[in-house]
Length: 296
Ligand SMILES: O=P(O)(O)O[C@H]1[C@H](O)[C@@H](O)[C@H](O)[C@H](O)[C@@H]1O
Ligand SMILES: [Mg+2]
Ligand SMILES: [Mg+2]
Image (cartoon, rainbow, N blue to C red; front, side, top):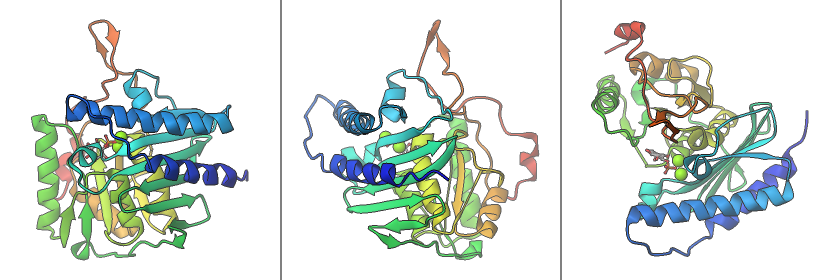
């Protein structure tokens, strides 16, 4: 088995360096401001990594937003979210992370999530455990859904189907009941909460590979379970994820939540007026036919 520890250590050092970026350039609107910061951090990361590893490929949230093709090949690939929690960043809500995963042959070899405001560095390497600031991490191991804190995200979709599915899924979980439902505003940190036992599960439909790839391996290496939202095999490009403290909890959540149609990350972007757009919004067929069997 190839040893990617050198890449991991380099990734950790660039993530910490990029997380020190305090300079905020004022622009006309919060959206402009944050876009500039996101782009700047992504450039810092990609330029440092590609100088050291010129053969490696990248999937970066901001590069994809700028029109770059999103394609996961067998080549060593860094999957980067330069700022996970952009809305938090604008509002100074204190959960903002840099998320970096590294995949070879489409398998994640390591993940790094640096929660910058908290100064918490989560990392995991395949088969070698998960760590928070160097200390080993473990999921809660909770198996009883009625004793769980479940994390999800509100996401950016605002159409009726997205909102009604999202709210009814939260409704179903609360009625089970679970102990609580939380949303921190960054999928990467949400999932790391599962890895450290602060929460017992996370689920969402609609996140992108850069939001969840790093934290998925961190949860697994902390002893947790990562599945598709139907309880099946997790595909990092599918935008569907459950991360849980145990298979029992993952399966229960899969039974309860209703699916939400989403374009895969590796699907060609939608055509708009004859031109390719970077739009990867949820779209497609409505509920699958077996949805009626889901627990209410
Ligand atoms: O765009 P960034 O990288 O900030 O990612 C976030 C999504 O934008 C949110 O919709 C979502 O709710 C999460 O906060 C997610 O992590
Ligand atoms: Mg993100
Ligand atoms: Mg981002």
